[in-house]
Image 1 (cartoon, one colour):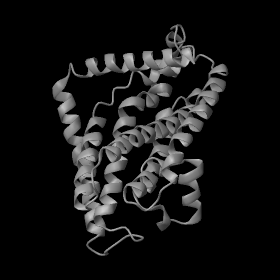
Image 2 (image 1 turned 60 degrees about the vertical axis):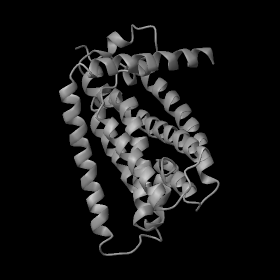
Image 3 (image 1 turned 45 degrees about the vertical axis):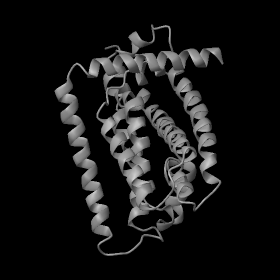
Length: 264
């Protein structure tokens, strides 16, 4: 347990250093944040267009869908900042030979890599999601209590770590392909299915995003709870996150044992 806590402390220390490095180029950060906001506004426009032709989607009205979208963006923003370094394992570290230097550090290499995240523009997702979530709660006349705020904070963090665990598992491919970014991105995009009520999909998609790649636990089940539509699935999210991280770390360590330097 002490070793785990030490790794967590080192991880957040590395993130802090990474943030300071990013803020050196403030104009670049501002431009990146604005660009990301524009991208997400396009997604919101798409949802608006859909509701110009229908009153609800699987029983969810416009405000409820936007609440789901907002809750999703909060977790996406947190995970983007905390785990973006996973995309670089193959092309930056293993292919170029920098991974050998990481192995010399007195800390687990996975901690070194995810602690070197540079995706500061993810803050745009976080704040856009936060603003949208608060506004939709008000529009839906849902009382914003201290307990509700606590749940949103906790389960948004849990959702981010669910995403992080899934991406960590996907990053294992980099030990053989050296192109983890493409594999991770392909799997990551599946989360878009969870931005809408999952009962609009066929059985295969529902199984995919609830058991195989459980993105539904990131925001869909928490949002149902906030809306008073579900009272138990949300509490499985921490269990899903813990199980996924146990699997992710074990698989990552197995892959690490098979690592062979590229000789670069």
